[in-house]
Amino acid sequence: QVHLVESGGGLVQAGGSLRLSCAASGIAYSINAMGWYRQAPGKQRELVASVSDGDSTNYADSVRGRFTVSRDNAKHTVFLQMNSLKPEDTAVYYCNAQVITLSSRSLYNAWGQGTQVTVSS
Image (cartoon, rainbow, N blue to C red; front, side, top):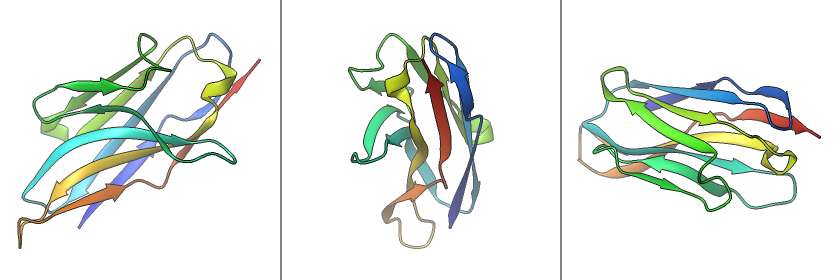
């Protein structure tokens, strides 16, 4: 079982920056893509950004050019650098990892507990 622990959320003024971190721990055969989703009140959870184990990245149109996703494979950690934050970025941000199990080589999605990001206008 792989556990994901996020950190780095908080309150920031519009135009400010925050950096989220997510550390994976536990036993797995491998971790493929890692990324960040967010969910605002009354809205569905949406993909923000992801990075493959080969460092290919993918971004939602709403954050491209402002957010940067990266990972440290040696430390099993994924980061989200958020710049030029807007009030509409306010949401709970969830870390996600695509995990291949050691026992059966099956794939499942692991999720963190979420961290609140609030951007004031």
